[in-house]
Image (cartoon, rainbow, N blue to C red; front, top):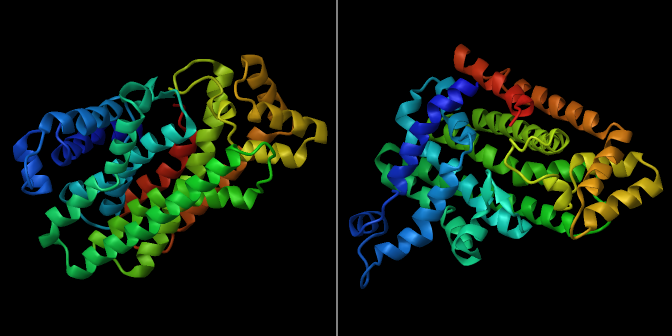
Amino acid sequence: MREALAEWRPVIDDAIEELLPRRIDDTYLTEFFGEPTYKYQPAAIQEALSDPIWLLLDRGGKRWRAILFLMIVEALGEEPEEYLPYACIPEILHNGTIIVDDVEDEAQMRRSGPALHHEHGTDIALNAGNAMYFIPLKVIEEYRDDLTDSQRLAIYEMLTHELNRTHLGQGMDICWHNEKEITVDEQQYYEMCACKTGCLARIVARLAAIVTDQPDSVEQQLARYAEDLSIAFQIGDDILDIQNTLDQAGEFGKEFGNDIQEGKKTLMAIYTAQEASADDVTRLEEILWAEDNTDEEIMEAIELMQSVGAIEYADTRARELSASARSHLDDLDLEAEPEQHLRDFTTFVIDRQE
């Protein structure tokens, strides 16, 4: 799976560069955004959009959402290369949410470098992040001759629905880590993940189904596959943050104890609140609520989670969701080899090491 990701990533980046070139000029602005009412200033748009966006993209990221889109297209019996521009839609959307998320979380680091709002300023970061919600929609217009009117309408309606739910999930997450007490239950956590992380994955699957003209039943099954996979991914991501902290290796590109520093109510924190003693829960809440944590406090929080088996519990739930994702492929008539890749991907997202 890592080989496939490495092979496809430069191809995806080339396709993204078609939508947002590294160098902005008047010709691009006119062709992409239309004739100016008065006069564009390419240098300003270069500084405010292209430079910060490509700074983030060039730092890394596996592009797995774009590649998952292509894998689904291939599993549906189509040539993935013919649908490459559409793969950019969820990938650009995802990176836009990262920029805004880092501002909201007051994050210091992203992909082994300063978060974009520290590098370019909050105003440029927010504008660039928000622009990335709209730039990829140009694909639908650019390739309108390849889509029927009903397909284009279905894409717009799908994106509106899923992106609205994305912000529900982000809203829940923000609210929870701005509260001292851990009042969230496990089902609410899964719903947050299904919205915040799951909706972008659902966009991947539903978009692949729509552009290849699949029936609604296939679209919905693929959406369920992607949603379960993405919740497993989010839990795995939270576990990886803890493992990275324990290893102190710094290879994951996040700060030491990042989720604890941010006071996030991960599944491990929620499970600890349900299973630990009242005194231990109070102490965990104090650490998560603190404005700053020492390394010792971060390790104390992890030890509280370990004392009730929270990390093992989260890993078990991630693997159950991974299995559930695979089950949604069972009744679909997919091409054998790419279907196996989709099945393998459900384990990759929780077993990856970085």
